[in-house]
Image (cartoon, rainbow over all chains, first blue to last red; front, side):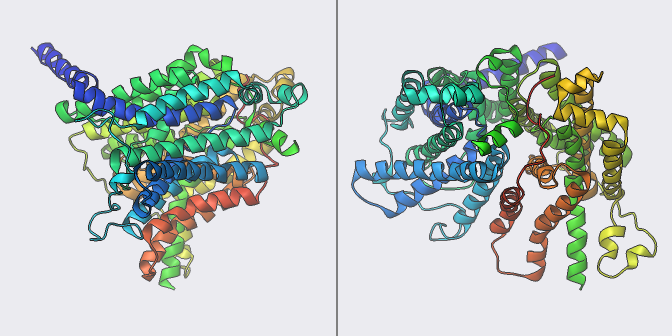
Length: 330
Length: 297
């Protein structure tokens, strides 16, 4: 009897997961696909940084910086439909790059580990958003901790009527393909991979300025995360508020690793994790299973991939200390 | 003067979990392992203390140490046995701990349970010294444990054969191996100690400070502890000083409220993180163990 009841419970949970993620067309298109967009864009950026041997754990903060910039642009600019949204996205990418740029500068100038600085910048960005939506950027009635909604000209168009799927999905696909092309087919991509695979070999045999490549990779990574924040504001939230990102910056690390740091594979892994997260929300809604279980599952996925050993083939085994002091010496 | 006394008291109280975690992380990093999973050890320790707390303070702390240790052993499995990347593994373990504790906490029916926090262990006479009395001599027992750990770790690192072995492993593992040191064992021991101390720090958060658990209540303390170790130049006494500085920075928010300053709360909350970036920039990292972050065994 107990077993039967438990069995029924499991079925109910799985059913809630299925209907919440890909089981219905609205869950698939308005839920999972929409959520896969920021995961793809941030994930590709993370992959670029990791490929260069730079540990950008700050996707979350860079995404928030981009969201702030896009909201500011969307609230204050009106240059017609196409141009306004384009400006908002460009500003978001610049803001994300600037936020990562703080870590890049601290690393290049003072040898501060980017692992620590990008994490600190996550906390600073989250508190900055809290301050802005309760202070200078709060909506005029001063009741809700959020900004006004951005003007319709600053919003991304819908791809399918009656759904939440927006043009950001196209941007995500284009970015993944472009990143794949640059990484595998261009000299810049080669330098990136060479610097990550072996800094000393890249420096002596390839005459590659490793610290410059690392800095550029971190800035690009930040630009992508910022862009993802801009796309989120222009396509989904239309405004700034706390918890705008349910941890996309961290999930994107799992996305990048499950996608083996390969931009095209990341399209697939972003979809998988988006389905996992929307499914978890469905389980919370319909079966009372806390949705934070998704981040535990993501973490286990990272550990499985890393543990299975695929990882070490494309990741450098260099010491953090040796790497930074070598950068300083270069 | 009551404000100054209260501020100092809050600074030392806030510094306690940071110091516990950072003292452990010092040993871990001296063996060449940077434990990004420390944040996970802290939240796991906090949750374990919350669950075991009703059975008594000692049981709470024991559970906290056990939970931290469990995550540390997972890190050791990946880093030492499988030779995987420290930073990726540590990040995943932190995510795992935050996700698992959040899930279990929300699934508990008695989620709002509040424990009585550990009372102060007042040192007679000394605690009556004006201003600094309660700050240094009227704290919960765990604070004294944290402070006593500093000379113990310092003596152990610099004055014992085992400490010398550990530092050798963190600087030149090949030479250490040649000298007959069992490198994997030493690294595993260092990770175990560091993660157990992280768990203890989480226990202190629940049992001596908050009296309850909240999702994500570690609030970056694991990462701050890693920054504190770098700031303290990988030396126990330096780490003690850096912990107190950070405790003061975090306690500043209480002072702002008490003094009624017109400063936005959210901006005050940023201070420790901004301070970390500034402090790490000011002190160049010349003293880092050579093998730090490197997976070798």
